[in-house]
Amino acid sequence: MAKTYGKNAIAVVLTGGDGDGSFGVQIIKEKGGTVIVQDRPTSQDFSMPETSIKTGDVDFILSLNTIAPKLIELVGADRG
Image (tube, rainbow, N blue to C red; front, side):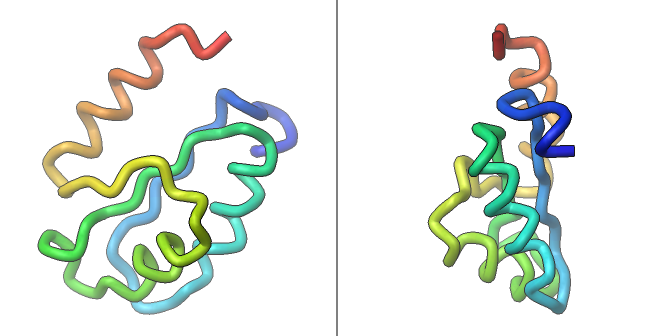
């Protein structure tokens, strides 16, 4: 996805008990994409979001309720 969509790629990392999202986060950022992760208070298991945050490649840390509106905003924005 990152290779094909580059700066138009958007990754969303939600609650989860592993750190497997961090590798994808780094690739998305290398290609200029945007990364959103779920915040601690709304996560049932913060392991996956936290591991992604530790990469330093996260653009937004948002509550579950605000992720969809942010996606709509980003998709509607000129990401040219």
